[in-house]
Length: 132
Image (tube, rainbow, N blue to C red; front, side):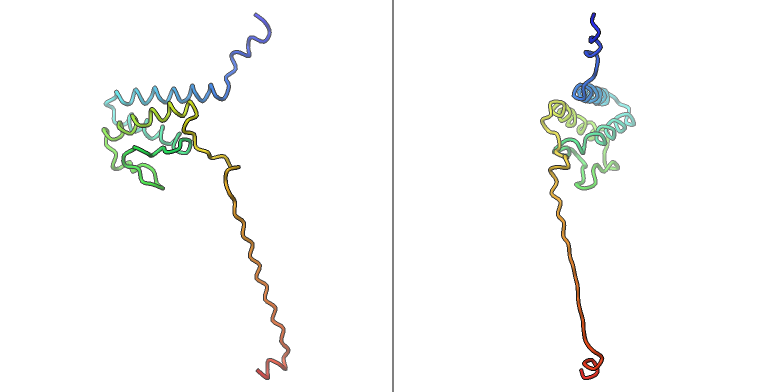
């Protein structure tokens, strides 16, 4: 054993991401087998909340998704939540590989700056004003 063996135990950001996503996939699998509606709902909200901004096309193929608002949870029943979770699972597997990551890098944004200068000069003498 040498003094640098500890380096192999350091978790890289990529390995940490993979570990966390795999944990979420395991929770999805558990929810898909569960009959506990509150656990399925909790899992659906957790996974959606974590990944909707990270994965391109997150809502594609999902039920009861309202563009600009997200899921309308009042209309999600147990079967629909499980269908959505089953759709989320492969999206997470692809995310681990970096295949469907959203490009939310601020360097890709195009900022538009508009400067408006309104300067009005009115010069009139009292004499001219009285004549008009």
